[in-house]
Length: 414
Image 1 (cartoon, rainbow, N blue to C red):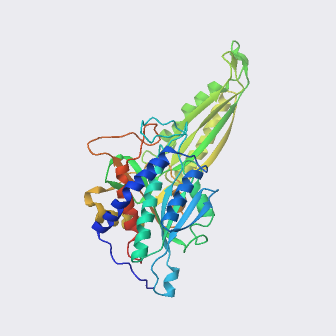
Image 2 (cartoon, rainbow, N blue to C red):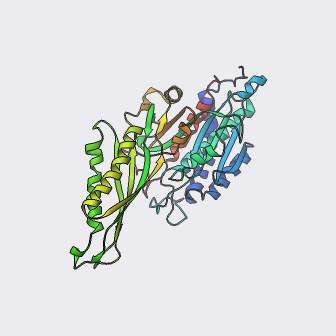
Image 3 (cartoon, rainbow, N blue to C red):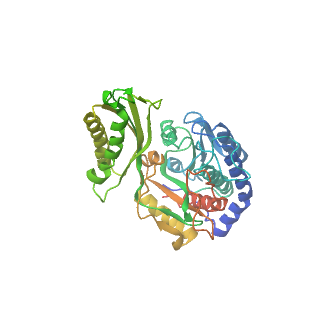
């Protein structure tokens, strides 16, 4: 297979193109930040994405993944009919916000009560728009070495928008362009300095599941507790016992998190209720540990409840799978990033992070690499973390994100 390879773009020329776009990109980021929308509600955000793609004459399809997802595409420079079957490189950004009241004090702070971009998806969307804009100009000037497909995805925060994009055929050439052959995505990282990136082969982020345990007992007047089978006492014992999954059921060199995050029961000071509900999350990195954690959570809940004269009904719901980075895709990212940023600014993450990411669904379909983009401003040792009311994506990271996405797409076609 032969294709018309695009002439190489010098680092200086690429960075000059990105610099010209930066003022408008920052303005877009601030606009998105001021108007956050939760998963599958991203109508305004989707409209902004579509408006920008139209301005740059980039082909796209909207209304995906429940209505707000957008898929855009740039064709490769084609020389022969055989090259039409060349697979595209996929680049992804998530668009949704979180139900958190903002406390940044930024002049472009959220205008929507109780909602904010506390995870930086406004920055991710802006970076992908910037990459589409720069690559679109290069496509018109000299052609691209491979097709590029841009995934503007809704509902990463618990809504599995990635899976719905896949189910709609976005990966398989049913919407725009050829099938996707590899995927890359990024996440702003407030634990790394600005200009530094990191990733690792294998598990990068954990599988994230949810559970609800309803403990059923017998209620009574609080003055006569001996007439009850108290579900609150049983629930408290269950919460403590669940911690033995990590300490006694999973090897000390393996990873599991069992966190109870909600415990609710009762409606009055003087009434022992009939039921109590325990809710939380389980995080794992391997199928074997997941099986142990899921099984033991059910066994412990039932056994402890029975010891207190109660019953426990467990609803365990599988969530996002492990975000599994392909070693070859990681190698491609690392070599591309080192050429752009220098050896000392491309790090290997020594161990996975137990947070979850629905980019994991893409990595189940094609070789993929998810990487993190440093956000800590120079001269500072730290900044507010993700999912905190004072978090704000660093505008100075946009140029690096755009450059890396562009360089990944401009790699010579295989």
